[in-house]
Amino acid sequence: MGPHLRHTPRDTPFRVLFLCTGNSARSQIAEALLQRKGRGDFEAGSAGSNPAPHVHPLTLDMLRQHGIDWTGRSPKGMDEVRGQRWDFVITVCDRANESCPTFPGQPVHAHGGMPDPAAVLGSAGEQHRAFQETLIYLSRRLDLFLALPLEKLERAVLEQRVRDIGDALLPDMPSTDSWPERERADQW
Image 1 (tube, rainbow, N blue to C red):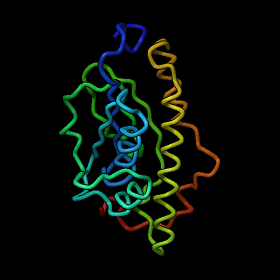
Image 2: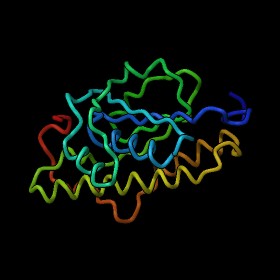
Image 3: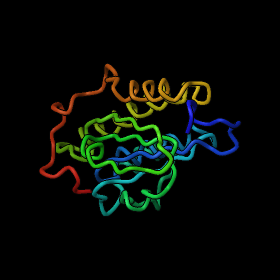
Image 4: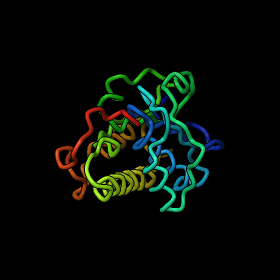
């Protein structure tokens, strides 16, 4: 692919794939946020290594509260996106990072693992707070990603900057230990 991500002026959007285990919460939220924030410059997708039967209801509620109608979406498996070309593949959980397949075209790969809000037990308020914090955290990471001069950076520098965004723990993001967990995080 050469030293830069693309050699020609951009006439198609950058394609970004978000991967997690169930594709019911984190990756769905990231996809929805990038579709909105990217305003046509980005085409986002998401998938899971072990897709859940449906998008978590709190994912849909949280996105709706932020003006994003995500009804009618369903989790996808990695097999549904594996043969497609992506410019960026971003894993948002450790399990998806470990099982991340190879994609054509050598996309930039970054990992930004974070707790699964769908794994939270406890009161409705605690569950809502977990989804709200996840949305805020992903939104901040995407703001940093969108601020990068993607077409101007050498590929190696771009890869490192995208990885740095994934490695950055924003100050108000709770640790995994602060959220009560379900027996199985991928129930949804």
